[in-house]
Amino acid sequence: MTTTWIHSATFPAAASPASSHGEDLLVATCLAAAADGDASAYYDLGVAYSTGSHGVDCDLIEAHKWFNLAAVGGHGEAQLCRADISDEMTAREIAEAQRRAREWIAATSRRAA
Image 1: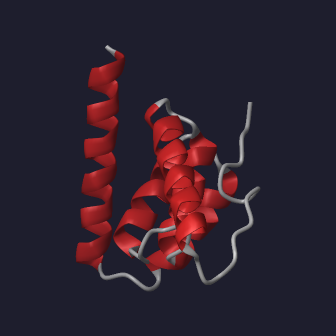
Image 2: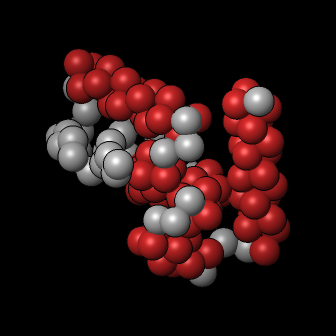
Image 3: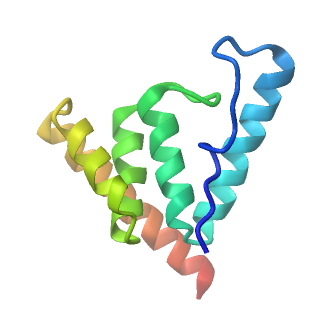
């Protein structure tokens, strides 16, 4: 089952305090789904971090991490997005993103066990 968490929601570009809470909740929901291994949630988190939307700052290292996890989970578009943002990153930043992805896998694997 594929669920699109962030793309199905539309928020105004300038967030009001009420919509800011909704954006925080949306990211929290994505994080919860990501902890369960939902590749679409990984992808949506990558989109949020790569664009600096939905209540998070633009962070290409975090975006790469989430796109990488989504790609490993079989999300085809995530592979393209990961490649696109990699062009804007240093080798050190990519290595850090990969380290964070490995840490996420290790942490979520321990919880599942």
